[in-house]
Image (cartoon, rainbow, N blue to C red; front, side):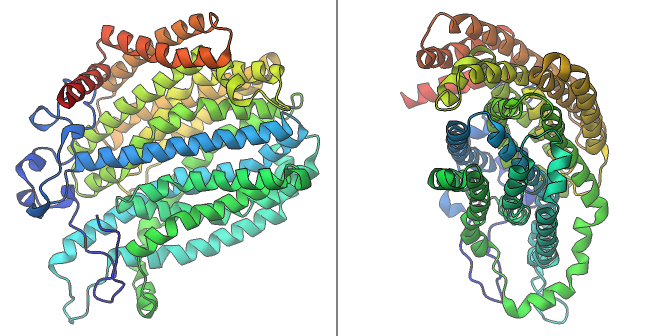
Length: 598
């Protein structure tokens, strides 16, 4: 895909070859006709390496450059996933450096609790405007607009001889200006109402004034995250994945820089200011690529807005409400946790935060493949290729489940060592390490649920039609979290809050898995559940082995290094013994790559 644009009236967007799975079947190569959405790994119940002709997408080679065909979709997805993985890991490392800086200078104290309450605002905004909400709304909308553009290429002019309107530019003109106005109003309202927000989020906070100041500094993210999420959705729909994957790198750099530079002057307010600066860097990271892909010619902008009524229904209230309710309910899991933890001794919110941030790293890595393939599922649904969508979703669930469960095994076995290596320095002492590690192991029980909710929610919204089932499932899980949290907090402290989170999110994941096959994409829920069950068994065995071996090496660094070898080895050997098709396929692929390399 070209990243350059002419910016002319005749060609407002770069002329790309139509996406592989959007072309008429007669125009596809024979291999692509057999499988327009090739696999990265086999789906549940399929034989290993069961791609077209016995290959997987990782084996697919691009078409010759002079053939006029786009590269194979599978190899493109593999490259996009690899690039996204690199930037995701880099962002995760910088996120750990960010948390280390906050832990070093502020520990688990009233100041760090105040900042984390204020950080609830950007966390909610990130989920609603970047990670889930905006993506679930706009990726299908942009995918549909791109499909319409591809279908209209045969008739580039209207009956009156004027250039045919570009559906993508119409979509941008209809949505972006209104969205910016709405987001600016929301940010201003949040700044004015910061004292009320802090009282609602944490009524037992020791220093509410500090939390109010931090909340006002982070309120700008309502605007900046919204623009970031819009740009990310547009770029991913155009299959440009690296700039969106790099936004959290820029974000964490902003927080780290401001914290290191100004912590001695502003205290924890420096970290809150860093959130605002980092959010601006997120926009700048994507802006150059977006301007090349979506150049808006000023003379035609007013005319585009007059035609916006045809595009507006794509993002109407009936489509917007289910997505917003689902995302808000999902993020409310964190609100419930911090509300309950604010009644516990100082540092409880910080222990929960550090444990959650580290424990969820495997989930973030596991969902990168779903992020890359979501536009593919949306295109398949827009083109009526439901079978292709089913195959893609099942393979994504299998691969994401394998990654997150391997990470779960590492967390179960080596939580104290992980926290000691990452955070035990400065104001963060041994007692903080023990408390955080205990919570992190409890959180690990819900990692598969978090992963499945992220992976299963995307297909529900891929068709662009309103569906309330994800909101119902998430609301049910939230009620379970609240009930279990109130029952366990005063008996078990922060461990009880983490247990409630794991139970609630697992309930939501189960409901989504059962509901997807009967409502949107006809996945084989029983086969998926059986596949994930085998992987979960392998994770339990590997985690137990790590737990036992971790006690044999006193040094935390050496113990963790040994665990990074031991746990994956036990996980894959157990997966082979349980005949997990995902493990068998992955090991066969690695062996074939090694043999070919020789």
